[in-house]
Image 1 (cartoon, rainbow, N blue to C red):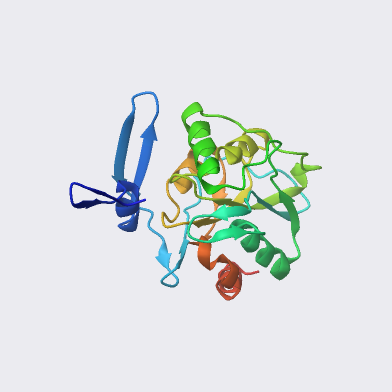
Image 2: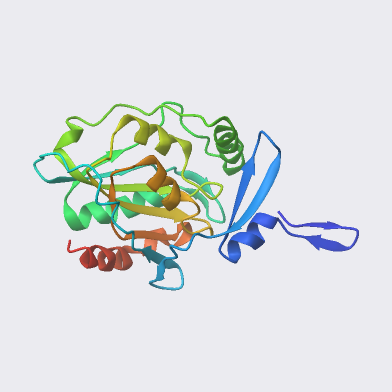
Amino acid sequence: APAIINDRTMLPIRFIAESFDFTVGWDGDTQTVTVSKAEAEEPDVVSSATTAIEEEPTATSAPEPAQTDGKTLIAYFSRAGENYGMGITEIGNTARIAGFIADKTGYDVFEIVPVNPYPISYEETKTRATQEINDDARPEFVGGIENFDQYDTIYLGYPIWWGQMPMIIYTFLDKYDMSGKTVIPFSTAAGSGWGSSLTDLKKLCPGTTFLKGFTTAGNRAEYSQNEVNEWLEGLGE
C-alpha cells in the first residue's frame, strides 16, 4: 500500500510500472528487482479493460499433430477468496471466464485444483505465491485428465500472479505434453495484462501452435461474457 515517509507519498514500483505496461520481476537468489518493457507481441485492444493477442504458429519444423478425435478441452486454474481490490469472491475470476467459454462451446472442462488449497486471505496467498516463484516450485493438483491425447485443442486459463502464471500451471504443463496441439490462452489480472505468460508458454510448450488469447481485469471478469463471446466468434466458435 502507499506510505507517507518524511512528508512524501511513496507508491509501490510494481503498481506504477505495470500501469505503463512494464513487467516487474523478482530474482530471489540475487535479491534483484527487474523492470522491463513488454515483449513486442503486444495485444490488440478490444476494449479499455480487455485485450486479446494473436500468436504466430510455431516453426514449420514442429512435429506433426498426433491423430486424435479432434476434441477440445478447457483447462484452467482459478482462486476464489479475497482478491485484489474486490473483497472476497465465491467464484474465482478466471473460473468465470472458463464458465463463459464452456457455456458458449460445450467443451469438456478440467479445473486445476491444488492439493494444498491457497488461503482465503489475499496477503497470505501473495506470500505463498511469491515463495513458490522463488523456489521454482511445482504445486501438486488433484486428479488428472483421462485420455489427454484425445484433445488436440486446449483452452488454458490462469490468473496473473506477480507478472506471470502461477507455478501450478507449470506443474500442469510438466505433466501434459502440448507439442502438436493448439493452445488458446485466457487470463485475468489486477493490472499487469498478460505479464510474461505468453513468452513463458512458448518456452514451456515447444512444437505448439498458439491462437488468439483473451485477457481481462479480474474486477471485470464477471461482466465480460459479451467480450468473451466476441472473442470466441473471432476464433470460429
